[in-house]
Amino acid sequence: MNLPISSPVHDKRIENFIRIIDEGYGNKQSFLTQRSINSMGEPIPWFTYPSIQYLSQLDLHAMSILEWGIGNSTLFFANRCEKIISIEHNNDWYNLISKELPDNSKGFLVNESEYATFPEQLNQKFDIIIVDGIQRFECLKTAVNLLQREGMIIFDNSDRNPEYCAFLREQNLIEIDFHGFGPIVNFTTTTSVFLTRTANFKPLTIQPVIPIGGGY
Image (cartoon, rainbow, N blue to C red):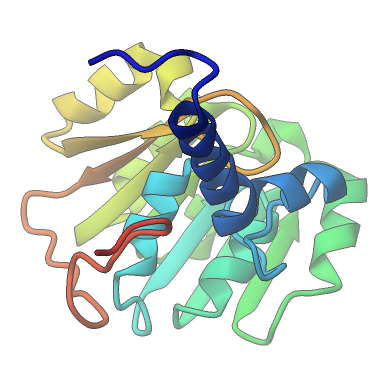
């Protein structure tokens, strides 16, 4: 049976949707502050909410992470991993975030000419590599070579460049797409996770956990 558009039941359903996204996920507060934060004001990646919930389930305490694009994602992962290295080209943004970095984080401010290839100078491989800055295809090509055998590449806003996703699949990586809303904005996008064939990321506790706004 179709409900009248103005029925109390229909209005309650809309209120519940708004409550979950604005209050449960913290979208309203992230929009007002223009910072990628959750409902408790804690930093989260500017990824889609489904991908954040998935990543939040994983035990990353022994993981090394490389990230193109410093931000609240750096702070989010720093609280969960062994170490994280971030590459940034924007001087103002780098200065803002670098003041908040904990001891297990290291940021590099580099010019655009060496942005994509700079991590090759570090002479190490990483368990997780995040591509969420400029020159994304060039960064993805570098990421493939720096990824551990049991690793993961996170490619944000992947819906804008499906040809880049095709490139990663051609490297024998498994693509998992997380579509949905995210912090700050009022439209949907996609965060894609690419896993190696031998990836074995373990959960923190039970998996899946009850999602925000879910339960019985």
